[in-house]
Amino acid sequence: MTASNSHIDPQDTVILFADLQAGIADLTQTNPLPRLKTAVLALAKLAKLFEMPVVVSGVQGEDGSPAAIVPEIAQALGELPTHHRTTCDSLLNPEILTALEATGRRTLLISGVATELAVQLPALTASDLGYKVFVVIDACGGMSERTEQAALARIAHAGGTTVSVMTLAGEIAGDFRDPKAQQAIAILYEMAKS
Image (cartoon, rainbow, N blue to C red):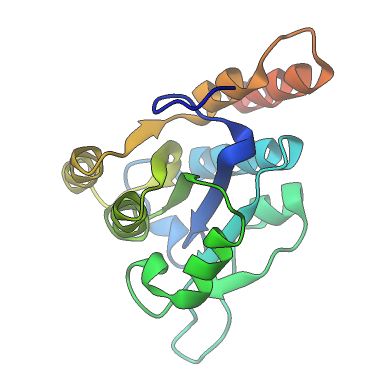
């Protein structure tokens, strides 16, 4: 695919799963938790199918315990390391930024809770760093419709945009005659039935 500002090339894409962990993901008010988890699972399956690298960030418990990441990510991708952030913006943590930069990819898809914090702040920083940023809207959850819409508007003002898992699957699937495209469409249908 030729370089484009509007289309997603899976060969140039990395995914950030931000704060999709027990105690945070279940706080979503704008996207019911079962629907959020279905979208996260589908996104993780697309990551595996199209070999898009994934970075997982989370927050340690007050007692220093590691973040308990939702099982849907490991279900599709196996156990991945969790990069624990110590600032509200994941990309202000050198370990997380280094993990993203190490992929060499310049398109960033973000999934997480809360849209207003764990998604918005790294989206703004990534945009400032020259990444093409997409918030995977159905794989995110906000604290309220009003505050989530404000976050999405700010991301858009900074040059980012939204995409749904369904649109992503259709966009990167390519020619339906290709076996990989058929698998992507199967992920889309599986998600739609859930």
